[in-house]
Image 1 (spheres, helix red, strand yellow):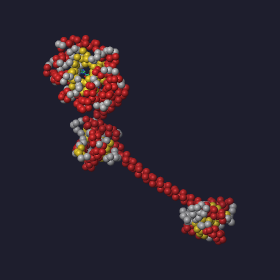
Image 2: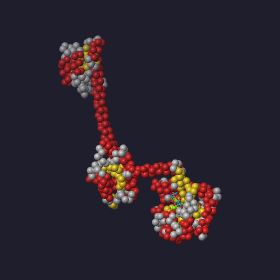
Image 3: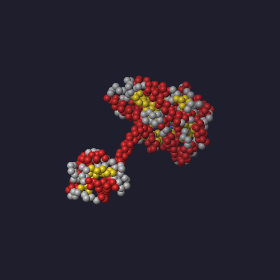
Image 4: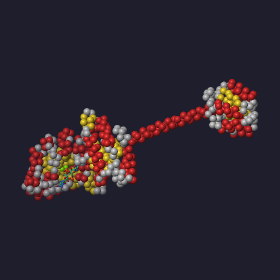
Length: 615
Ligand code: C2E
Ligand code: MG
Ligand code: MG
């Protein structure tokens, strides 16, 4: 590139280094004077060879080149200059007396930048020289900008690469513990699975670990302590990994879930040995916020079978096995077995179905009469839920209530049940079908009772149905009362004040402290069916039933015996002084419409039993 760094930036007097090549001394003299005066730096050559040498040495900004010269003519000089890299870009302006268009065209074909005819006008020469220097400057500027741009692009590319690496690292790392995260684990697991396909000896297993009661620690001691604990767990797992070469990867999946990928093993017992070490390392208390925190883990194990095609499937099964371990009190770990999956699938389906059923209001109430065992009169009904499944038909509560309790659906379900029961009572009342003393019992689960606004909810339902509160009897199990004493105590008192009656259901199965029950505003005990069922004519078959009846009496409570199936049981209960009962002997639960008919029909059928009790 020619050096025009000496060029002035002003457009009118742009200057630079000019090489004049002309064999006529006068021409050189005139041009030199002219250009020097205009501020240019001037070099002169009297022939072609000198011109080439000077051009290479001084790198002029422009060359004014005569065509007709002895020795090398202008065209030949031009050709040589163009062929050499150091001089190839220097603009060459031909100066010649040849004025034919042919000559000019030929000059341009040789690579001329411009053409001036002799005799020349000084202004024209100056203007053209200036113009060429301008063009040169513009080219240089363009080149500089291009280089700058390239630098910027390169810099940006590097930054982008860096950011990309950070991004990849970020997406594969758990920020809290700096362990690989789930995504990284799945990637690694997929690789190991693929390797196993071609290397039958490359056995592996997956260990999935979930901390028990972590949420409680988090809630009671705060998230910061929870985070510290998770970091501590991560450190311990890494320590086990350092000691045991067979742990390929330790990852945190989020929350209190960790996973270990175990390779280089030859049997299940290798994995179990390792898991025992993990359990042992976690059993040492963690010292956090000046207290010792103990943590237990439930661990699901899956053997890396070649039948697995996706890493996700292994994780799914590890999760199932982990939950199985959580449910078991025998061992902190559990191997995945194929039938666990179908159980899980069944529960998943049940959950989906239940959700839909609540939306579509597929639940119905059946009613079982509660009978005065002496007068053999119906004194009330117990509302029992049934699920009218669109394809499976009528499903009894035993098949879904427990699951609904576990999953929390029971709250919504219980509310639907209560509404339906109150609406039925309202319809019966309005039609004048039920006497004022007839009550309807509705089962209520613990979770329902624990809702902070349970009182308002119940009141709204009663009010909307427009029924008298004393019609309603809520059946609560011993367990739900005992487990949540303080709150339940308050709610039960408030319900009593509102004239809603309360019964303890399935009494005798929950080992409740009778002294405590005595303090509660409960008006009725229901003796569980399991105590009634064994009753025969033999006095020894009565078991604890007489005791329960006596206690209830002393506490001023009514007793309802559940599950009376035959006349012997009825007679025994009558003799023990049990005033109320329900059971298949009288009636199974029936749909709402049939229930009300029973009020008229039932007594005639039961009349003959009256004598049996001698009442
Ligand atoms: P539960 O509250 O103790 O209801 C009595 C159960 O005993 C009913 O079963 C009833 O049909 C059955 N039963 C009554 N007499 C006899 C008899 O003589 N022999 C036999 N073998 N069984 C008899 P069901 O309707 O299957 O209800 C089972 C349980 O499901 C109920 O026990 C209750 O704990 C729960 N449940 C039913 N409906 C609801 C509800 O709406 N909410 C809640 N939370 N639980 C409900
Ligand atoms: Mg009940
Ligand atoms: Mg019961």
